[in-house]
Length: 187
Image (cartoon, rainbow, N blue to C red):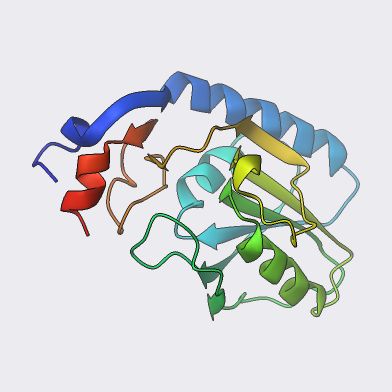
C-alpha cells in the first residue's frame, strides 16, 4: 500500500454523490414502508457503519439503532464460510421490526446466520438492507435476499465508504475497485 490510498484504486465505482443519492432513495423507501412499525436498525459492524450513519439521517420516522459484529472474511478477499458473531446486540429486540443494515451482500452466509440468530430473539420482523448486492457470489444454499438495495455490483473487490481490505480503506469517501497489486502488497 502506498502512503496515498488513492494510488491503490483502479476505478471509482460509486462517487460520493452517487452514494448520497442511494442513501436518500433507500431512506425514503424505509420511511414509507416502516411508517407504522417499531423500527430498530441493526448495523453489521464494522463495514456498514458509514452507510448506516448516512442512511439514518435520511429516514424521517422514529427509529432506534443497535450494533452487531460478525466475522467471516479475516484478512482475505472472500468469505471463509465460517461466521462468528463476536458482538451481540445491546437491547432486547422482542417486538421490534429489525432492519439489518449491511455494507455488501456477497455469499449471503453472514446475513443468513445473523437473520437466523436474530430470529431467536423474537422480533416482529426482520428485513435486510444492503448498500451493495453481489448476486454472482451468492451461495446456492443461501435463501436470503435484501429488500432494500443501493446497487447491484459485478464481481470486483471494492473498498471505501466503510468497506475494507484487511481493515484499510474504510475512510475513502467513495467506493472504488482495489488494484490487484494493492491486495498482494497488503497480505
